[in-house]
Structure formats: C-alpha cells, structure tokens
Length: 112
Length: 114
Image 1: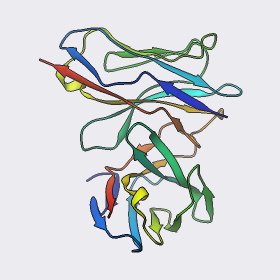
Image 2 (image 1 turned 90 degrees about the vertical axis):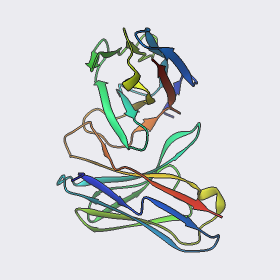
Image 3 (image 1 turned 30 degrees about the vertical axis):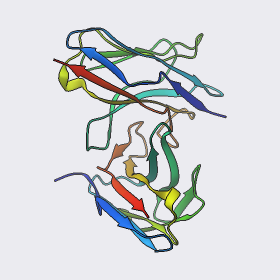
C-alpha cells in the first residue's frame, strides 16, 4: 500500500462549488504539506502543518483552507472553486529531522 | 527572496546520450539543494541532494554538484535510458536542517527515445 494517499484522484467541479481534497499518510510523519502544480510553474506551496496544532500559510493560500484532523490526515478545501484553481494538487509529508519530502500521487482538479 | 531557475524543456535525447539539465538558484544563507523526479502519473520522488558547498549528490547514475561560486546545481547523467523519461525538478530548502518550505523550479520534461 502507498505511504501517502490522496482522494479523489480526479475531480471535475463547477465554479462556486465547495471541494475537499483529502490526504492520508502511514509514514508516521508530523509534517504535512499541500502544493499545486501548474504547467511551467513547478510546484507552489499552499499550506503546511508541522503538527496537529500547527497550520501555516504558504506562498499561495488565498482561496484555500486546510484542516489537520489527525497526525495522519491533512485536508485541503476550496470554499468556492474558480477556474484558475484548475491544477494538479499534491500532498507531501516529511519527518522532523529529514530533508526528504514524500509525495502522494496527486489529485487532478478541473473547475469549469 | 528564494528562487530556482531551471533550463526550459522539453528535452529529447536518444538512449545512451549524455544528459545535462541546468539549475541555478538565488537564496540567502546556505541552502540545501535537491533534484526530484516525477514519473508519468506519479508524485515526486527525491532523486538526490546536497547540503553544503562542493557536495556531490548521486543516485541511479545521476549526479549534481553544489557550486556556491556559480549558485548552480546542474543534473548530469552519462548515459540515459528510456526509463529515465520523466519531469525533473530542482529545489532548494533555504534553512539549514530539516525540510521546511521547499522552493521548486518549473520542471524540465525529459523524453528518451530508443
């Protein structure tokens, strides 16, 4: 089984709808991250969390919110989706003392 | 601020050709540098890293040397294979110590033809 899982893998939704993307991990890591990937722009950090009680905004947090329900779960919400939020979204985790981030397989979101 | 600039793709090579993907960075202090690889339909995986100047990271035949004087971390492989076809991302961690906010380059698509 994959260490970092994301659901759903693909989602098409309409402008104005509320969407939640979920991330679960079995690696036992405290640190979790949400990124979005756009062609030609690489990955940009949306939010990150260093433990259940710690949530921090990243580079592009406007229009997004997150919830850290448990050490293993970190959800990303789009309260009112808009077309320019169409992108590939990745969740990642890392251990406190490690340089390496472990990525999930991604969620492809299309907002029409 | 911190930034990473990568050579634009796509890059298309024949099998067994030599690969170089250029990466330069801007950062205050002494960042750690990384190359991540994204195979089709998958998330990113760490390929190699270097944490201080003159360090050479290596893995799976790929190498990159942390050059502080030229602020570069170019990825090289002497003989590419079809299975190396992927998107490659250069990234930096501006803090010494464990991974916090990674700053990524825009990615370079590599296609290797048989």
